[in-house]
Length: 119
Image (cartoon, rainbow, N blue to C red; front, side):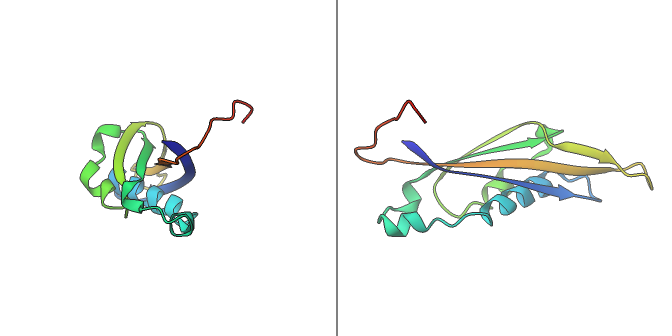
């Protein structure tokens, strides 16, 4: 498997302190930066791609994996949630504004591909 795509995004929840919502928005942000036209061009089946999503939030244990997984339209999906992102305290009511970061990696089995150690 070769990594063909790496996209990154950020998402937030300004008033609900909802880490899942922020993570889903970060995934949507990353997805909106890319087009998977290479699958059609190369006649590859997108259901066979391997998708690894890494999400960074301040409270990883508060992310609902099932909801996050529904944001991804294709592939065999792996979700990793780790400590990261950013929380900013609201000056009005002492609540937290939650910011999540997401990285989406897409791996595909490419026949005949070689690894170039210079890259």
